[in-house]
Image 1 (cartoon, rainbow, N blue to C red):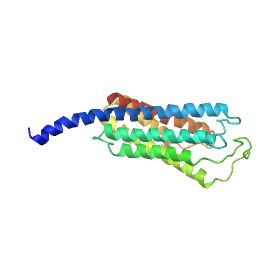
Image 2 (image 1 turned 30 degrees about the vertical axis):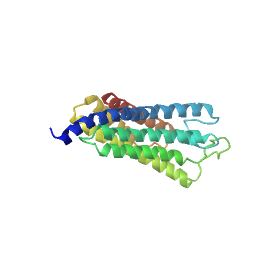
Image 3 (image 1 turned 60 degrees about the vertical axis):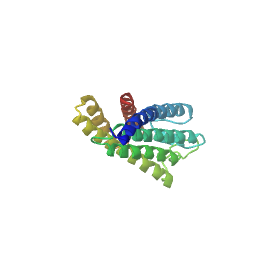
Image 4 (image 1 turned 135 degrees about the vertical axis):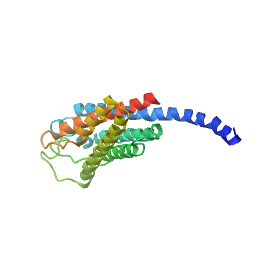
Amino acid sequence: MTTTARTAARTSTPRTDRARPRTRTLLTAAALAGPFFFVSSTVQALARPGFDLRIHPLSQLATGGPGWIQQLTFVLAGLGFLALAVAYRRMRPTGIGRRLVPVFLSIFGAGIAAAGIFPMDPQLGFPIGAPAGPVDLSWHSIVHSTAAAVAFTALAGACITALVRHIRARNVAASIADGLVALVLLLPVSPTGASIQVAATGLIAYTWVTGYALALRRAA
């Protein structure tokens, strides 16, 4: 063995060992992002007067005086999803989706964070004192809606790419989960009950992220 080869053999394993805890930390953050978002949103929805999920989307919690809490919730969740993109790239350096899945997950995480930075408009009687009906969309409300739509479309892309990978690996359970989540994410939003549908879609999407992060963490 040459001197260069012996040096590489001595240094490569310690570097990998040092990287594993960092990767597991990223995956832990990714796994907690979805539960954190929904726990925070649920507490706010119950605590803030006038909020009704049948009428108001969870995004509207980012309006009003305490709205910064939901804005921060979006941003932190988005950062958690970005952590999954980084960890996936480290854990899956080869095979189908090694480049595409991290790109999709990065767009997803960035879109969720952007949706928090740019909030919706006060409307439909929330927060208290807001106009009773819908209002003309402001520029930041348009950015919010666009960022959220792009984020969930990107996550659907990640699910479809993961589906192909899992089919090739003959992982039936994971393939079914990937396909169902992608289908839910690509369903058109109903004009009636949109707030509940969006909340349910988010719950399914974030659960997939949590499950995927935990599966990668076990492998790490």
